Image 1 (cartoon, one colour):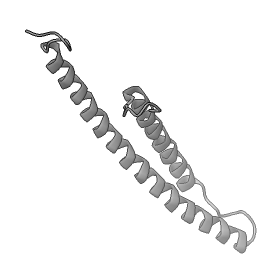
Image 2: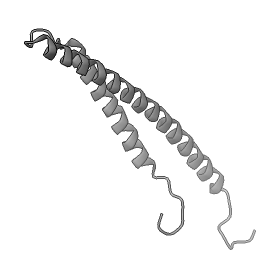
Image 3: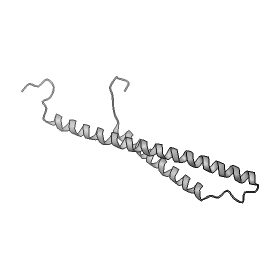
Image 4: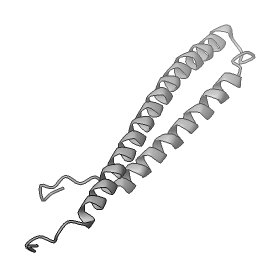
Amino acid sequence: MGDGRFVVDLPDLERLAKGLDDAKSELDTALKAMGSAGASGLGTAELTSACEHFQSRWGYGLGQLGKDAQALHEGLQTVLKNYGKTESDLASGLQGAPSPGVTQ
């Protein structure tokens, strides 16, 4: 892009979308693990309460991150589909076009 051109690298966008999908899967796994882990039996009531509070807050935060990652992933999928279609349509349209400088 240093030469003033706008370039969309579809393979890079595909890798980003896959990375977001992988991150969402990891967040889902972490949320499930936190949900099945119990804070009871840790010792004092204060420690149990602190752990439960931590699980609650982090569970909420991870859930929000997961929703954001999903929204970004879906948006990127739409971008990829639209850019791919535009490139395909442009290539099809240019196949019958004369070369620059050639008169018919």
